[in-house]
Amino acid sequence: MSNELDLRQYMTIVRKRLGLIVIFVLVCSSASAIFSIFFKDPVYEASTKIIVNQTASQLATGQLDINQINSNIKMIDTYKEIIKTPAILDKVVEQFPQLGLTAKQLTNKIQVSSVNNTQVMTLVVQDVDYLKAAKTVNAVSQVFQEEIQHIFKVENVSILNKAVMNDQPDPVSPNVPLNIAIAFVVSLMLAVGITFLLEYMDDTIKTEADVLQYMGQPTLAMISKMSPEDAGDGQTSRAKQPYKAGELERVSIEK
Picture (cartoon, rainbow, N blue to C red):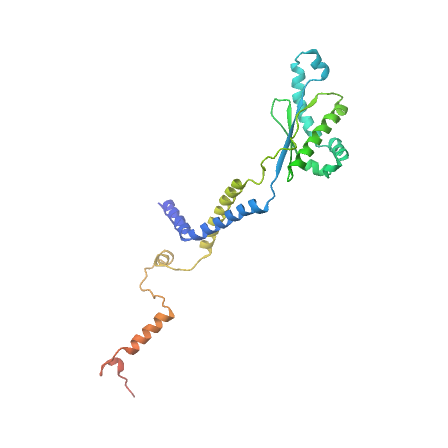
């Protein structure tokens, strides 16, 4: 019974400040939408795919070597780390100065991923300019293909597809619906928390129920609040009220 009563009290508190909660949530959600649409720059994504396959001599024999395929799959993790090292990125900066990027900036831009048990790696670069993102990811893929031959003395890396230069993809960021949804949930939690905090800090007694709850005594009388206009009207009406001779209210006794 007590838990049910507590839940009712919580609902009463929420209903009492429902206007504050609704306004706070609407303002935060609207601000998130406006910022995402008008102030945040769109970010585009370009990608290439690289396959780690058999060497040229093995392909010439026409035989499928399962052990070699498993070895190539295991090499994927090593290649993923090598791509983001100075051995590759310094070469990219040197050969493609038109990109205007340092090796450290390239490290932060490049994302390398792979699907389990496959010989394919995906290189992804994001930038506010799609053309620059495409040029960057193609440059990194090209340099990696060339340099890995000198590092491991093998020719088992091929580029499956490059980023298309004249493509016009949709931006991957900002995700306006997702941002609005996150702002809605977070602002709702904050608004409810602020509501309970205000209720906790408010120690004033406002209603008969508050008197009974905190003091354990029933309310004997209430003094209504009057506006100055109402008070003035009351005094005027009393002043205009006729009195009869002999009324006790008009009699004074002198000593």
